[in-house]
Length: 383
Image 1 (cartoon, rainbow, N blue to C red):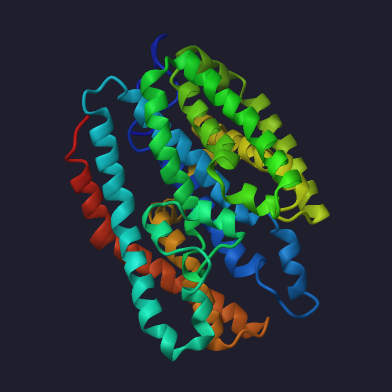
Image 2: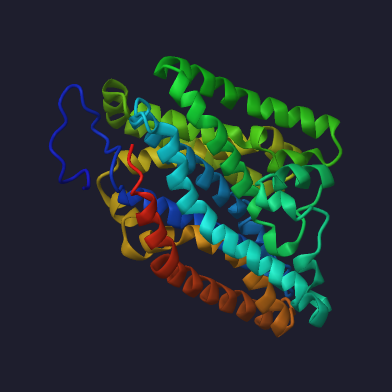
Protein backbone atom coordinates (compact mmCIF):
# COMPACT_ATOMS: atom_id res chain seq x y z
CA UNK A 1 0.00 0.00 0.00
CA UNK A 2 1.44 3.40 -0.97
CA UNK A 3 1.37 6.56 1.11
CA UNK A 4 -1.12 8.20 -1.21
CA UNK A 5 -3.81 5.59 -0.56
CA UNK A 6 -3.14 5.21 3.15
CA UNK A 7 -5.50 6.67 5.71
CA UNK A 8 -4.46 9.90 7.37
CA UNK A 9 -2.26 9.14 10.40
CA UNK A 10 -3.50 9.80 13.90
CA UNK A 11 -1.45 11.74 16.43
CA UNK A 12 0.23 8.51 17.51
CA UNK A 13 1.03 7.32 13.98
CA UNK A 14 3.96 8.14 11.75
CA UNK A 15 2.97 9.96 8.53
CA UNK A 16 5.69 7.98 6.75
CA UNK A 17 4.97 4.46 5.52
CA UNK A 18 7.26 2.13 7.48
CA UNK A 19 5.90 -1.38 6.82
CA UNK A 20 4.86 -3.48 3.87
CA UNK A 21 6.29 -3.10 0.40
CA UNK A 22 7.62 0.44 -0.10
CA UNK A 23 8.09 1.03 -3.86
CA UNK A 24 10.57 3.90 -3.55
CA UNK A 25 12.97 1.62 -1.70
CA UNK A 26 13.02 -0.75 -4.67
CA UNK A 27 13.76 2.29 -6.80
CA UNK A 28 16.65 3.33 -4.57
CA UNK A 29 17.96 -0.23 -4.69
CA UNK A 30 17.75 -0.03 -8.47
CA UNK A 31 19.78 3.18 -8.45
CA UNK A 32 22.35 1.54 -6.18
CA UNK A 33 22.93 -1.45 -8.46
CA UNK A 34 22.86 0.81 -11.54
CA UNK A 35 25.64 2.89 -10.00
CA UNK A 36 27.73 -0.23 -9.34
CA UNK A 37 27.12 -1.49 -12.89
CA UNK A 38 28.27 1.84 -14.31
CA UNK A 39 31.39 1.74 -12.13
CA UNK A 40 32.51 -1.66 -13.38
CA UNK A 41 31.37 -1.23 -16.97
CA UNK A 42 32.36 2.37 -17.68
CA UNK A 43 34.08 4.37 -14.98
CA UNK A 44 36.61 1.78 -13.76
CA UNK A 45 37.60 0.73 -17.27
CA UNK A 46 40.80 1.97 -18.91
CA UNK A 47 39.62 3.59 -22.13
CA UNK A 48 41.77 4.71 -25.06
CA UNK A 49 41.19 7.82 -27.10
CA UNK A 50 40.87 11.47 -26.17
CA UNK A 51 37.15 11.43 -25.45
CA UNK A 52 36.74 7.94 -23.99
CA UNK A 53 39.72 8.31 -21.67
CA UNK A 54 37.93 11.24 -19.98
CA UNK A 55 34.91 9.12 -19.00
CA UNK A 56 36.26 7.81 -15.66
CA UNK A 57 36.69 11.38 -14.39
CA UNK A 58 32.94 11.88 -14.20
CA UNK A 59 32.11 8.70 -12.31
CA UNK A 60 34.89 8.42 -9.77
CA UNK A 61 32.38 7.90 -6.96
CA UNK A 62 29.98 5.56 -8.74
CA UNK A 63 31.47 2.67 -6.73
CA UNK A 64 29.64 4.19 -3.77
CA UNK A 65 26.40 2.55 -4.85
CA UNK A 66 27.45 -0.08 -2.32
CA UNK A 67 27.21 2.59 0.42
CA UNK A 68 23.60 3.20 -0.60
CA UNK A 69 23.07 -0.55 -0.22
CA UNK A 70 24.48 -0.32 3.32
CA UNK A 71 22.12 2.51 4.28
CA UNK A 72 19.15 0.65 2.81
CA UNK A 73 20.13 -2.57 4.59
CA UNK A 74 20.39 -0.76 7.91
CA UNK A 75 16.99 0.84 7.38
CA UNK A 76 15.17 -2.30 6.25
CA UNK A 77 16.74 -4.78 8.66
CA UNK A 78 16.67 -2.33 11.55
CA UNK A 79 13.01 -1.60 10.86
CA UNK A 80 12.08 -5.27 10.79
CA UNK A 81 13.85 -5.88 14.08
CA UNK A 82 12.31 -2.84 15.76
CA UNK A 83 8.81 -3.94 14.75
CA UNK A 84 9.18 -7.48 16.10
CA UNK A 85 11.62 -7.06 19.00
CA UNK A 86 9.12 -8.49 21.50
CA UNK A 87 8.39 -11.59 19.43
CA UNK A 88 9.19 -14.95 21.07
CA UNK A 89 10.48 -16.11 17.66
CA UNK A 90 12.62 -13.01 17.17
CA UNK A 91 16.00 -14.63 16.49
CA UNK A 92 14.76 -17.87 14.95
CA UNK A 93 12.53 -16.22 12.37
CA UNK A 94 14.97 -13.43 11.52
CA UNK A 95 17.86 -15.76 10.80
CA UNK A 96 15.69 -18.32 9.01
CA UNK A 97 14.37 -15.66 6.63
CA UNK A 98 17.82 -14.17 6.10
CA UNK A 99 19.21 -17.63 5.35
CA UNK A 100 16.58 -18.30 2.70
CA UNK A 101 17.26 -14.90 1.15
CA UNK A 102 21.05 -14.81 1.21
CA UNK A 103 22.52 -18.30 1.30
CA UNK A 104 21.07 -20.29 -1.65
CA UNK A 105 22.20 -18.04 -4.50
CA UNK A 106 25.47 -17.33 -2.71
CA UNK A 107 26.08 -21.08 -2.38
CA UNK A 108 25.45 -21.47 -6.11
CA UNK A 109 28.06 -18.79 -6.81
CA UNK A 110 30.60 -20.56 -4.58
CA UNK A 111 29.90 -23.90 -6.29
CA UNK A 112 30.36 -22.32 -9.72
CA UNK A 113 33.59 -20.77 -8.50
CA UNK A 114 34.83 -24.16 -7.28
CA UNK A 115 33.93 -25.84 -10.58
CA UNK A 116 35.62 -23.06 -12.52
CA UNK A 117 38.76 -23.41 -10.47
CA UNK A 118 38.88 -27.16 -11.04
CA UNK A 119 38.09 -27.15 -14.77
CA UNK A 120 38.36 -23.88 -16.66
CA UNK A 121 41.66 -22.96 -15.06
CA UNK A 122 43.52 -25.76 -16.83
CA UNK A 123 42.09 -24.79 -20.24
CA UNK A 124 42.17 -21.00 -20.02
CA UNK A 125 45.28 -19.78 -18.21
CA UNK A 126 44.46 -16.21 -19.20
CA UNK A 127 41.57 -16.44 -16.71
CA UNK A 128 43.73 -17.74 -13.87
CA UNK A 129 43.20 -14.61 -11.77
CA UNK A 130 39.47 -15.38 -11.76
CA UNK A 131 40.09 -18.42 -9.58
CA UNK A 132 43.40 -17.88 -7.80
CA UNK A 133 44.09 -15.36 -5.07
CA UNK A 134 45.68 -14.92 -1.65
CA UNK A 135 42.34 -15.00 0.19
CA UNK A 136 41.67 -18.59 1.37
CA UNK A 137 38.63 -20.37 -0.04
CA UNK A 138 37.13 -21.29 3.36
CA UNK A 139 36.74 -17.61 4.28
CA UNK A 140 34.02 -17.23 1.65
CA UNK A 141 32.02 -20.03 3.26
CA UNK A 142 32.24 -18.33 6.67
CA UNK A 143 31.68 -14.74 5.49
CA UNK A 144 35.08 -13.73 6.82
CA UNK A 145 36.66 -12.94 3.45
CA UNK A 146 36.78 -9.22 4.20
CA UNK A 147 39.00 -9.94 7.22
CA UNK A 148 41.39 -11.93 5.03
CA UNK A 149 41.24 -9.28 2.32
CA UNK A 150 42.32 -6.69 4.88
CA UNK A 151 45.10 -8.97 6.14
CA UNK A 152 46.39 -9.78 2.65
CA UNK A 153 45.70 -6.32 1.20
CA UNK A 154 44.05 -8.09 -1.71
CA UNK A 155 40.53 -8.73 -2.99
CA UNK A 156 41.41 -12.36 -3.72
CA UNK A 157 40.08 -14.27 -6.76
CA UNK A 158 38.55 -11.98 -9.35
CA UNK A 159 35.35 -14.02 -9.52
CA UNK A 160 34.55 -13.25 -5.86
CA UNK A 161 35.81 -9.69 -5.49
CA UNK A 162 32.43 -8.13 -4.78
CA UNK A 163 31.66 -10.44 -1.86
CA UNK A 164 33.57 -8.20 0.57
CA UNK A 165 30.41 -6.10 1.04
CA UNK A 166 28.29 -9.22 1.52
CA UNK A 167 30.59 -10.25 4.36
CA UNK A 168 30.11 -6.83 5.97
CA UNK A 169 26.33 -7.16 5.82
CA UNK A 170 26.39 -10.69 7.22
CA UNK A 171 28.56 -9.55 10.13
CA UNK A 172 26.09 -6.71 10.65
CA UNK A 173 23.26 -9.28 10.80
CA UNK A 174 25.11 -11.12 13.55
CA UNK A 175 25.38 -8.07 15.81
CA UNK A 176 22.43 -5.74 15.27
CA UNK A 177 19.63 -8.18 16.30
CA UNK A 178 21.13 -8.57 19.76
CA UNK A 179 21.63 -4.81 20.15
CA UNK A 180 18.07 -3.97 19.04
CA UNK A 181 16.61 -6.68 21.26
CA UNK A 182 18.38 -5.60 24.43
CA UNK A 183 18.33 -1.79 24.23
CA UNK A 184 15.48 0.65 24.56
CA UNK A 185 15.00 2.96 21.59
CA UNK A 186 16.67 5.99 23.25
CA UNK A 187 19.70 3.93 24.26
CA UNK A 188 19.83 2.30 20.84
CA UNK A 189 19.92 5.76 19.23
CA UNK A 190 22.81 6.77 21.50
CA UNK A 191 24.80 3.62 20.66
CA UNK A 192 24.21 4.03 16.94
CA UNK A 193 25.23 7.69 17.13
CA UNK A 194 28.48 6.69 18.83
CA UNK A 195 29.17 4.16 16.06
CA UNK A 196 28.58 6.84 13.43
CA UNK A 197 31.11 9.12 15.16
CA UNK A 198 33.65 6.36 15.85
CA UNK A 199 33.82 4.92 12.31
CA UNK A 200 35.71 7.85 10.69
CA UNK A 201 38.05 8.03 13.67
CA UNK A 202 38.89 4.34 13.30
CA UNK A 203 39.42 4.74 9.55
CA UNK A 204 41.76 7.66 10.15
CA UNK A 205 43.80 5.69 12.67
CA UNK A 206 44.11 2.75 10.28
CA UNK A 207 45.01 4.98 7.35
CA UNK A 208 47.80 6.64 9.31
CA UNK A 209 49.20 3.59 11.09
CA UNK A 210 48.59 0.48 8.96
CA UNK A 211 50.08 -0.55 5.63
CA UNK A 212 47.44 -0.14 2.91
CA UNK A 213 45.25 1.48 5.55
CA UNK A 214 42.94 2.93 2.91
CA UNK A 215 42.14 -0.49 1.52
CA UNK A 216 41.81 -1.99 5.01
CA UNK A 217 39.32 0.73 5.96
CA UNK A 218 37.32 0.06 2.81
CA UNK A 219 36.62 -3.61 3.55
CA UNK A 220 36.35 -3.91 7.36
CA UNK A 221 32.93 -3.86 8.99
CA UNK A 222 33.65 -1.43 11.87
CA UNK A 223 35.01 1.07 9.36
CA UNK A 224 31.81 0.98 7.27
CA UNK A 225 29.41 0.71 10.18
CA UNK A 226 28.46 4.39 9.97
CA UNK A 227 26.37 3.81 6.83
CA UNK A 228 24.64 0.77 8.34
CA UNK A 229 24.01 2.55 11.64
CA UNK A 230 22.57 5.60 9.90
CA UNK A 231 20.12 3.29 8.18
CA UNK A 232 18.98 1.89 11.53
CA UNK A 233 18.72 5.42 12.92
CA UNK A 234 16.42 6.28 10.02
CA UNK A 235 14.27 3.28 10.92
CA UNK A 236 14.04 4.61 14.46
CA UNK A 237 13.26 8.14 13.28
CA UNK A 238 10.36 7.28 10.98
CA UNK A 239 8.75 5.14 13.69
CA UNK A 240 8.49 8.13 15.99
CA UNK A 241 5.31 10.03 15.11
CA UNK A 242 6.52 13.41 16.35
CA UNK A 243 9.93 13.24 14.67
CA UNK A 244 8.53 11.89 11.42
CA UNK A 245 5.95 14.69 11.25
CA UNK A 246 8.75 17.19 11.84
CA UNK A 247 10.79 15.54 9.10
CA UNK A 248 7.93 15.86 6.62
CA UNK A 249 7.35 19.49 7.59
CA UNK A 250 11.05 20.37 7.28
CA UNK A 251 11.78 18.43 4.10
CA UNK A 252 13.13 21.60 2.47
CA UNK A 253 15.91 21.70 5.05
CA UNK A 254 16.62 18.02 4.39
CA UNK A 255 16.93 18.76 0.67
CA UNK A 256 19.28 21.65 1.43
CA UNK A 257 21.52 19.39 3.51
CA UNK A 258 21.54 16.79 0.73
CA UNK A 259 22.49 19.50 -1.77
CA UNK A 260 25.36 20.64 0.44
CA UNK A 261 26.65 17.08 0.79
CA UNK A 262 26.30 16.58 -2.96
CA UNK A 263 28.46 19.66 -3.46
CA UNK A 264 31.17 18.10 -1.31
CA UNK A 265 30.99 14.89 -3.36
CA UNK A 266 31.23 16.87 -6.61
CA UNK A 267 34.33 18.52 -5.21
CA UNK A 268 35.82 15.10 -4.38
CA UNK A 269 35.08 14.03 -7.96
CA UNK A 270 36.65 17.18 -9.40
CA UNK A 271 39.78 16.66 -7.32
CA UNK A 272 40.02 13.08 -8.51
CA UNK A 273 40.08 11.45 -5.08
CA UNK A 274 40.05 7.65 -5.29
CA UNK A 275 38.22 5.30 -3.00
CA UNK A 276 41.34 4.58 -0.90
CA UNK A 277 42.57 8.18 -0.74
CA UNK A 278 42.94 10.08 2.54
CA UNK A 279 39.99 12.46 1.99
CA UNK A 280 37.62 9.59 1.17
CA UNK A 281 38.82 7.24 3.89
CA UNK A 282 38.88 9.78 6.71
CA UNK A 283 35.67 11.73 6.12
CA UNK A 284 34.48 10.90 2.61
CA UNK A 285 32.82 7.59 3.44
CA UNK A 286 30.83 9.36 6.14
CA UNK A 287 29.85 12.15 3.73
CA UNK A 288 28.60 9.48 1.34
CA UNK A 289 26.70 7.74 4.15
CA UNK A 290 25.00 10.98 5.25
CA UNK A 291 24.19 11.91 1.64
CA UNK A 292 22.55 8.57 0.95
CA UNK A 293 20.72 8.81 4.28
CA UNK A 294 19.28 12.14 3.14
CA UNK A 295 18.32 10.55 -0.18
CA UNK A 296 16.50 7.78 1.68
CA UNK A 297 14.58 10.22 3.88
CA UNK A 298 13.72 12.45 0.92
CA UNK A 299 12.39 9.41 -0.95
CA UNK A 300 10.27 8.37 2.04
CA UNK A 301 8.78 11.85 2.52
CA UNK A 302 8.23 12.80 -1.14
CA UNK A 303 4.90 12.59 -2.95
CA UNK A 304 5.48 14.24 -6.33
CA UNK A 305 7.91 13.60 -9.15
CA UNK A 306 10.53 12.07 -6.84
CA UNK A 307 8.15 9.33 -5.76
CA UNK A 308 7.02 8.76 -9.35
CA UNK A 309 10.61 8.57 -10.61
CA UNK A 310 11.67 6.06 -7.96
CA UNK A 311 8.49 4.01 -8.40
CA UNK A 312 8.82 3.50 -12.15
CA UNK A 313 8.62 -0.14 -13.14
CA UNK A 314 12.05 -0.64 -14.84
CA UNK A 315 13.93 0.88 -11.90
CA UNK A 316 11.94 -1.12 -9.36
CA UNK A 317 12.50 -4.26 -11.45
CA UNK A 318 16.23 -3.64 -11.44
CA UNK A 319 16.10 -3.21 -7.68
CA UNK A 320 14.23 -6.49 -7.33
CA UNK A 321 17.05 -8.46 -8.97
CA UNK A 322 19.86 -6.42 -7.43
CA UNK A 323 21.29 -9.18 -5.23
CA UNK A 324 22.02 -11.72 -7.95
CA UNK A 325 23.06 -8.95 -10.33
CA UNK A 326 25.57 -7.71 -7.79
CA UNK A 327 27.07 -11.15 -7.21
CA UNK A 328 27.48 -11.99 -10.90
CA UNK A 329 28.02 -8.79 -12.87
CA UNK A 330 31.72 -8.17 -12.30
CA UNK A 331 33.17 -11.53 -13.43
CA UNK A 332 30.67 -11.86 -16.29
CA UNK A 333 31.49 -8.41 -17.67
CA UNK A 334 35.22 -8.94 -17.36
CA UNK A 335 34.99 -12.37 -19.01
CA UNK A 336 33.08 -10.86 -21.95
CA UNK A 337 35.67 -8.11 -22.34
CA UNK A 338 38.54 -10.56 -22.32
CA UNK A 339 36.88 -12.91 -24.79
CA UNK A 340 36.31 -10.05 -27.23
CA UNK A 341 39.80 -8.74 -26.68
CA UNK A 342 40.00 -5.61 -24.52
CA UNK A 343 41.12 -2.68 -26.68
CA UNK A 344 39.90 0.27 -24.65
CA UNK A 345 37.43 1.06 -27.39
CA UNK A 346 34.59 -0.65 -29.26
CA UNK A 347 35.42 -4.20 -28.15
CA UNK A 348 35.64 -3.14 -24.53
CA UNK A 349 32.31 -1.33 -24.77
CA UNK A 350 30.65 -4.33 -26.44
CA UNK A 351 32.11 -6.65 -23.81
CA UNK A 352 30.66 -4.51 -21.02
CA UNK A 353 27.29 -4.30 -22.78
CA UNK A 354 27.09 -8.04 -23.44
CA UNK A 355 28.15 -8.71 -19.86
CA UNK A 356 25.38 -6.51 -18.46
CA UNK A 357 22.77 -8.11 -20.73
CA UNK A 358 23.83 -11.63 -19.73
CA UNK A 359 23.94 -10.69 -16.05
CA UNK A 360 20.47 -9.13 -16.03
CA UNK A 361 18.99 -12.08 -17.92
CA UNK A 362 20.48 -14.60 -15.51
CA UNK A 363 19.45 -12.49 -12.51
CA UNK A 364 15.85 -12.22 -13.72
CA UNK A 365 15.61 -15.97 -14.27
CA UNK A 366 17.22 -16.59 -10.91
CA UNK A 367 14.67 -14.34 -9.23
CA UNK A 368 11.66 -15.95 -10.87
CA UNK A 369 12.72 -19.59 -10.69
CA UNK A 370 14.99 -19.78 -7.68
CA UNK A 371 15.13 -16.83 -5.29
CA UNK A 372 11.48 -15.79 -5.13
CA UNK A 373 10.16 -19.29 -4.27
CA UNK A 374 12.80 -19.62 -1.57
CA UNK A 375 11.92 -16.25 -0.06
CA UNK A 376 8.28 -17.34 0.01
CA UNK A 377 9.32 -20.51 1.82
CA UNK A 378 11.34 -18.48 4.30
CA UNK A 379 8.26 -16.45 5.17
CA UNK A 380 6.64 -19.62 6.47
CA UNK A 381 8.61 -18.77 9.61
CA UNK A 382 6.47 -16.31 11.58
CA UNK A 383 7.45 -13.79 14.23
